[in-house]
Length: 293
Image 1 (cartoon, helix red, strand yellow):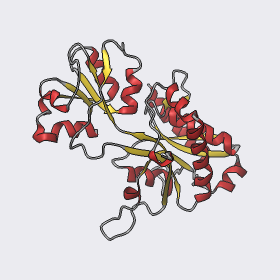
Image 2: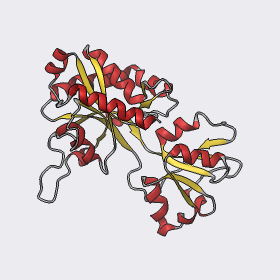
Image 3: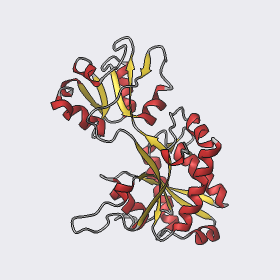
């Protein structure tokens, strides 16, 4: 049902701003509204709550930013493309092929120097028109498991003998189907999202679920703690074990990045960012960018 609500919101939004473009800070403050892109139906970061109101970690951060700038806020609900490059193109510097609407600010953008300097086949910067900044969370992977069926997860080798659920076409999906010559493949079950995988675990169809730490910890909050536990194992051969997420603006509008980046820094250093993550029962990890020791 909610996907139709998202569609209706997007339709009304597009009709209200038609040919919206990303704007400099002065124009945003003059016009009194900032347009922020967040991923649709992506709990605990951005989704519609039971009252069909925007909710989630990214939504709350964006509201803090809007309040600090003294403006109202409109959300664009993004549909994830095949890559982050697609999302940055569709919502920051070019606009979607259908609606052409662009945001002033995009939440949950990659924050990685190597990624930001990536070049195409002819040597041009892929994201030359995008400025990525303001890391606010370090993400990684996590496993939740049924302690009766699988008391502990010291290593990934346990899944040669125990079934594990993953979201389809996710990095954990490809990892469990290919790492170590595919020895986990026969014990890997695929679901449309982590919520379905958790439900399957509760039904005894799998012994564990692997996914993003933020999502797994958020879902774990609703499970009986004496029956389900978060593991602390590592993930050999998965590639990147930890990465930072931040924000993005059009490269021409650095003043907006400076102002919004300062808001995020204030949220982190004051402890307010931790409170936002706690509100959604999600494990928070401060990016190394802010650590002084």
